[in-house]
Length: 89
Image: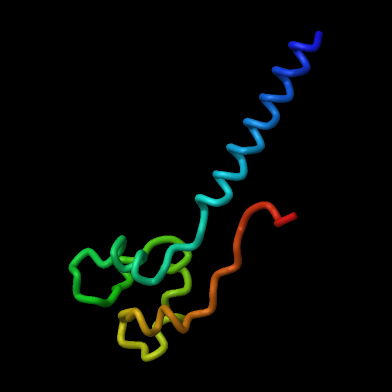
């Protein structure tokens, strides 16, 4: 019986550790990381065709000079998107 309790305890600890690691993995990428991932033609600006996800949805808000591109400066000044997912405890 003690062995079962010990195994169950180890399982719970292991599961909690994995869950915490997954939460830590979901950190917000930096502006430079986003440009590395999305700037496919390497022109130091993002077109609407290059962007993905929430950035695409808010493209017109982030493109403050309305030239059809997002620069690093515009992205740095953009409001941070609201996190979707379970609330923090």
